[in-house]
Image (cartoon, rainbow, N blue to C red):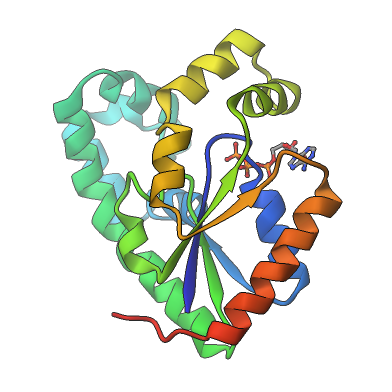
Length: 203
Ligand code: ATP
């Protein structure tokens, strides 16, 4: 069984993933895989350079994310072009990582993905688990963790999928508005349920 774990910025996805890991559950991080597939030497990076030009390649040969973001920001067609290069490869790599983890006989595995729904990666999982916090908490935790002020944090939260839409699409929800012990107790309860269910992966 594969559980897709998602939530908005600073909702607590990594903290939840670590709590599952402490119970012996492995995870794959979609963000990490998204970075892997554009590393130097990867065909996706060559395709990106071919389409967007060498100005998106840093002097050391790595992807200049800032330059690429500047091009695709606000340009839907260019964004779609980028996604057409990256998404199929991310998906393929995720499937391979998940299959490898499942072969290790874990009771179930996690796919941690900030854009689980937006990227279509929810199709790879059996259940969607949403980490939920009020937007004010997201803003406060973002501002205290990252180098942004509250107004910037609010703008980031506002640009993401809404809290309600995420909740509407969730099979399971973790409320991370309280302390980390409360969070760990919810993770332990879900872990019991997931182990008991043992749904086979449908695809
Ligand atoms: P992102 O997607 O933005 O990388 P995330 O969803 O993985 O974030 P975390 O990095 O787990 O979120 O948590 C965001 C911040 O909030 C961290 O600084 C973390 O220590 C803090 N945090 C998480 N859960 C709690 C909690 N229950 N109480 C207080 N602080 C918390």
